[in-house]
Image (cartoon, rainbow, N blue to C red; front, top):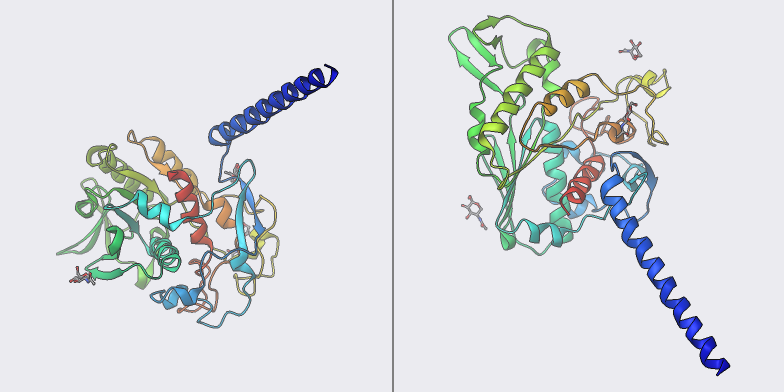
Length: 353
Ligand SMILES: *[C@@H]1O[C@H](CO)[C@@H](O)[C@H](O)[C@H]1NC(C)=O
Ligand SMILES: *[C@@H]1O[C@H](CO)[C@@H](O)[C@H](O)[C@H]1NC(C)=O
Ligand SMILES: *[C@@H]1O[C@H](CO)[C@@H](O)[C@H](O)[C@H]1NC(C)=O
């Protein structure tokens, strides 16, 4: 008798323990979904990264291919983004492609969009090297198709989102006009970006005038112009996107590293020689002001738009740029691949699952 009593008690105890453990994990999983800001965290060393070797991405552009261009230190490829309050799931190509079977994804923006687009194409191809693919370009649109899954990963080069039009007086940047949007209709997932070209002046500025409403101006406050263009784009999203069909993301402001004062290394005049991220979660220089303008503009949009809020995590990555291992002088704006944009895509994947 004593034996049975003893046994019942242990079974009851085991069952309760199991229940408690189960409840704990269920609650924890919910807490993760509800409370975790995946953009808050720090970079940790993880030897299972990068997600791909550059040699496994045959179409990688020279511009981003720092190793091919002679960069020897590779520690920068081994960092993984660790959110403070939860874990990210590792990118899974098969799962990603199943979700997007028969669908199209389009990045729209400047070369930072190309950076993230290229990253995703490399992430997909390297893990399924035997899947057939096709890479084509027509006008401003590059298309990477994984033929077996009928998934299209596209890039539309459009640096301001609003239009630049050749007129009699010259090239006019039209803050209220967004004809380029014709190419974005019916895409299943759109990831927009614009910022880096708004401060271009001199020979690399691709317009001669700015049109704001009925006014044609020689120039204007560029932050204000950026804000007006975002407003035009937001109206486009509200009147052209069917939220039942299309998911809309904004890539967020990708930061540059040309001023070491901002990471407490005043002698550094660029990112050259930087081999490690800023450790911890805080960038001494703080957030650039364009982030506030962007966030304000996003709040005015009615349709759902998700901000890939990559600025903070990328600010910490002063080590992630090509510097002299790019194609044009000192590049502390773009990112080496494999590298930081892989994390942007891994976060995008986590927001989708
Ligand atoms: C980003 O940095 C700013 C300023 O350093 C801080 O106020 C904000 O909370 C940070 N955001 C995240 C998601 O870490
Ligand atoms: C790749 O795309 C081009 C343009 O759409 C097409 O002509 C070609 O047949 C495609 N190739 C393959 C292998 O699917
Ligand atoms: C670098 O940043 C500091 C702090 O914001 C600023 O005072 C300084 O003018 C900047 N230097 C350059 C070359 O822009």
